[in-house]
Length: 178
Length: 178
Image (cartoon, rainbow over the protein chains, first blue to last red):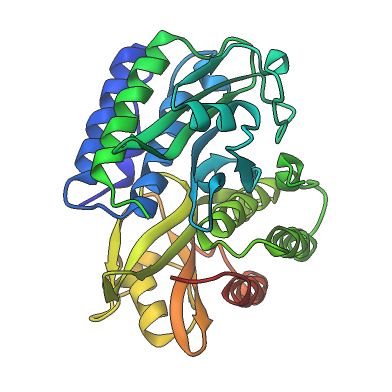
């Protein structure tokens, strides 16, 4: 049975070890459950709690969650499950708006050390200073994105990119997308 | 434009005033946006942050979010957007399991002062000691539930019931349900 303990992470492990635990927990959650809302909701919780267990800058993450392809407009992302403060409801993919729109329109990860230097950045939350956005691609189509914001500049690195990209593949294959 | 500031609440207001602000913020979020995933995701954020701004026992809330009617089995609830630790993925409505299943099967709010005394309580998180579950009813059909857990006994009262029931009506009417 799924249990809240899955959100508990030791505080003396490396970021790689922490992400490995997230990935294994996510694999277990998706085993036998393909509902995308259910799976993204629990995965957002895993991500939020792993960042809070890590030292700075990861502990300064202030938003972790998902946008998905809008069911009524395939040139728009719509807010999915997340943990953090209230967020923008829709983001344009075409024309691409901000970090999320760019990741979705190009189907490539955006690792942004300082969002204030990113052209067309959308300031849903002025506290956010760095961001990583990873597309979830299924059969060549971007079905959604993983979006994580951090309150400090340079909050993310290649370890985040590598593991979030693995997680995006797992979610892409493990969910029935609308 | 929707902004993270909607999640900020003054710390010197009453619970009634805090819920009134949540309700107004939710009304504004739902104005022109009927996507249920988007709306439940932002509403879970509003609820989480309002509880954290209030004194105990509200500040001891450890889970706030939603289960909805499972698209593949109408006798099952499936996890929706939430804030808090990883949660049970599905809950049976028929036979009714635990506080959530009972709220959904009877279409009535369950205000449980001590979950350990509730027959058939599901311990997704052993930290939860009290719970309130409010059905979201649309056209006579339970489309989902609002579920809030608290780490202390007696975490909820008639003020919570009254405002969460108003919020359930707003969400029921303001979203396109699957």
